[in-house]
Image (cartoon, rainbow, N blue to C red; front, side, top):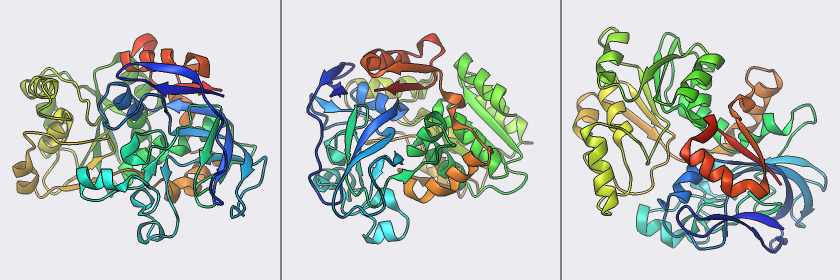
Length: 389
């Protein structure tokens, strides 16, 4: 079969690899009908996530048709059309039974690796390095889905692949990011980064009752899309007076909630952003937290910082004093996708939201390498790439 494979930093190839097989009674094999390149995949593309191996199959946003099931998978049958959460969860451990699916104790066979870096291991992830299990990803014609009796959800024929696909990751990620803000009527929410997750986060903040949402980015196409699809107010992230303008827009108080939808590869022109790039270049810092610093500085006293943007290692010059002094609440983490699948599918079915509005590029899987380069370099107005095997 064809699959999009990682061979080193910025070296993505479409290879011919063996088709997967059922190896556990709780497995399923899914024939992929649509998959996507996620902003998190660009961290792999740029060599920011360790423990990748040449030939690893990428991709964690995918859906398709069930073509084979293990003997213990009773909830699915051949021919079912399903979306698959990017987090791999056993459904039976303490964390899964408490709906914290991305913290599953049993799905990462390489838990010892994660424990050395983070103290504890979260769940396994599709196509996202050997720290998170070394599982083959879904940017392929077929994929093995472990714990298929827990993860995949059937999709009705009335919902197209493009409308359903982002249930696998970025729609629940955006929703959880907004939910973590505990939004009250009248709240103002500021969202840094208007990439795919940021676009959907703006929508979700409004769905959950925000009165105002301020989107922050410097890319023209992203700002334009956000304004076309919602009543978001826009600020330029390269504006040297950004923090002052946020204060002015909120009567001097600051946004009630600030969402970092950028994460570890934040860009900027300020002194701290240049400092981060220099330290990262000589491997004295793994992540660039320029946006996170801004969010902490901007947020009102007693407010909430929500972090859906991925961070992978260690950051410097973290303003813990500001967070402490202002009594901020910080909420973050991989998304508990399974928890959100049914309620968010219902919102799609009711036409409250159509997540497919973010798609700008539709490519064949043979064009996977081109898709990565276009997305990473933000060429041709690219906001979201989907691949059809």
